[in-house]
Amino acid sequence: MSLKIAFVGVGNMASAIIGGLRASGYAGESIIGTSRNPDKHKSLEAQYGIVMTADNEWAVEQADVVFLCVKPHMMRDVIDSIAHVVRDEQLFISVAAGLELAALSAWLKKPVAIVRSMPNTPSLVGVGMSGLIANEQTTGEQKQWVSDAFDSFGGHAWVEQEEHMHTVTALSGSAPAYFFRVLEVMIEAGQAQGLDAATSRKLATQAMKGAAAMVTELDEDIAQLRRNITSPNGTTQAALETLEEQGVESLITAAVNACANRSKELGKQYKV
Image 1 (cartoon, rainbow, N blue to C red):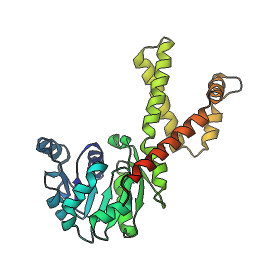
Image 2 (image 1 turned 90 degrees about the horizontal axis):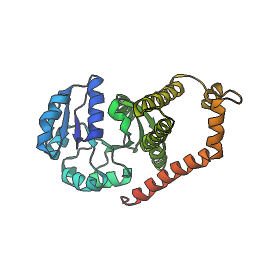
Image 3 (image 1 turned 60 degrees about the vertical axis):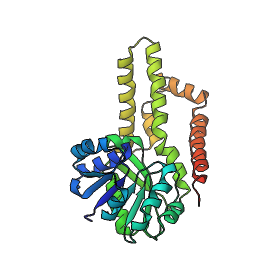
């Protein structure tokens, strides 16, 4: 579909999506972005070749697809200000954490197609992962367009039950922070053994990048990949045994559960 797209609120995540769309061949003149900060308009227009405005209402009026990219606590006020120009045939995509489809639908005041998304920060460098769920008004053609749009800056996974978006948050939305923390600890351990910070960072970071590439590009079970580099009584076995002794499974499971539970708590704030 050749569509006119509006981004209500152009921050980091919206910029990542716009960058992906432009890189995949989408015309800049078909994209409108909004920002309350006029100082950002010229730089964004120059960077992406898009049209910038401070007028949310005008942007939504022009669009076939509207990305709602404002903070959750701002969303209702923003939607209230544009609801009177919403058209039945439009598609709305929310990137605000915690806002359920029912709340978005109630605020928009029309039975429009809505997709709720949970991207993550690696989207900024083109390797993001996004969880997606659509309401019943969303057509197969619209879902395909959304899939292609989110694939332009990474990958996507559709879920069928909205409660699973909390798990999406725990497994991909927040997960980059877990890996950053592991890297921090590994780098510090390398320094404690005498390596300089730059060398420790390079070694640990490339190892993590390589492990992720093997998991995504090789058709092998993850446990088998682990076994392939774990020689009996070798160095890797010593490290893995220590991780198990220190409770790595219970620690990571607890962290994922805590993230999902906090997501549920935050979601209750925006229920209708």
